[in-house]
Length: 173
Image (cartoon, rainbow, N blue to C red; front, top):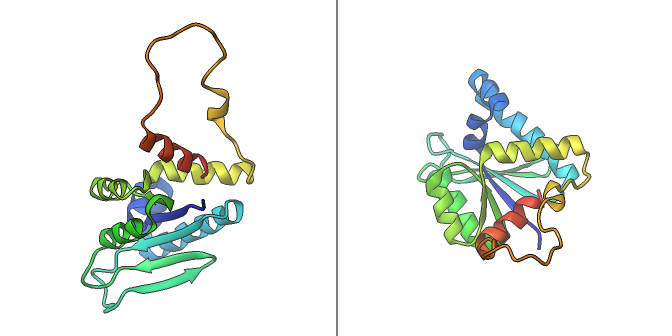
């Protein structure tokens, strides 16, 4: 099953130390740098990536879609926010969606629709890790966990099914 990463663009930019500085200089510079980072990530990991920006305060009458460097860019139209577009996309994608946001309203809504969620700073660290690893799958969690033993340790420590599925999607990043 392929993953569709849906990113709350301005939420990610404004939570990133590197991107927020660029955003303060020029909003377009912040967006372009984010797109460049995602394009480099897409070369390493071939996930479908969509970045949604808020176009509610712009002069656009209809929703605008663009594609740069393999990344789909969506600006919400004048009458709705980017949050609404993200929720609609996550509902449509269902369990294939991984939403990158720290907005708790979006988090609750998309989790109810079966999508996995990762915060902006956590996703940014995954981007950097993938970039520095050069595409090699590094799974630190594979070495930590169950060790063979016959000793009973008490009640099971298995995560709920929803959290296990979320963890699997995040591991694929």
